[in-house]
Amino acid sequence: MALFSTAVTQGADSFLIDALMAAGDGKWFLIAERGELDSLTRERQLIISTRSTYDGEGANQLQPLLFSGLIMSGGIIGYDTNLRSGGIGARYLGIGLNAQHRVDEVTVALRVVLVQTGQILLNVITSKQVYSTSTGFDTFRFTENGTELVEVEAGVARNETATYAVRSAIEQAVLEIVHQGIAQDLWDYQPQTEETENENLN
Image (cartoon, rainbow, N blue to C red; front, side, top):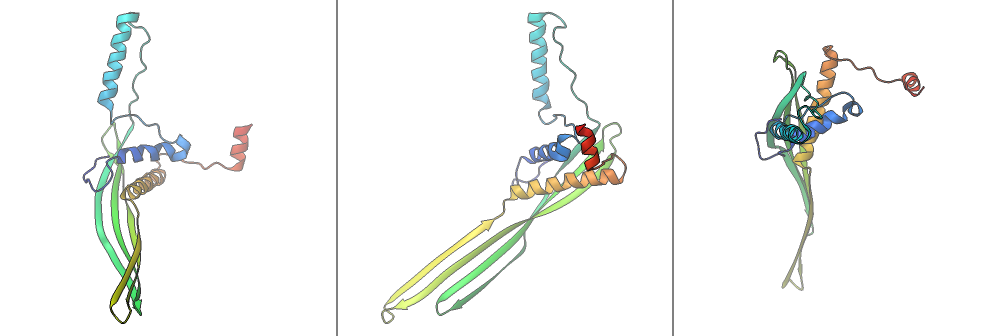
């Protein structure tokens, strides 16, 4: 997946691979390495050269590389901050409570391209919101006839990570790609029933 912003993770392709390998217990997609294709090719050439030198021509030939019928590509196309924000607070007799929240949003695009023709078969855009919340407590008191001032503050904040949001958006995009592919008869999916599972066991 292409990346266009340093505000989000630079490992989106790893999340996509993980989501594809997890789909259907690893049986739905056969994934070929392309991100490190140059390193892979150089290593294969080194193996071929070494075996040829020491074992003779044609010794222990490598299996051919997998070629792809489909290419999945896309990118993190948006990270919008402060879509919604707000808070509430109250104070009584010098004692105050407050709560605040903020919502960001990350948007991911994923498409499926047919290698033979370059046709884009499927295209999906998904979004995941990132939530941040904070709560605080404070007290403000005068003591000893107004000659001393006591002020105490405490608070806690919780921020959902952008990395988690990116991963969730990518997983949702893969799920939507699977559903769209079924709807357009690009592939088929038959959920296992208890009878099918029993037949497989027998």
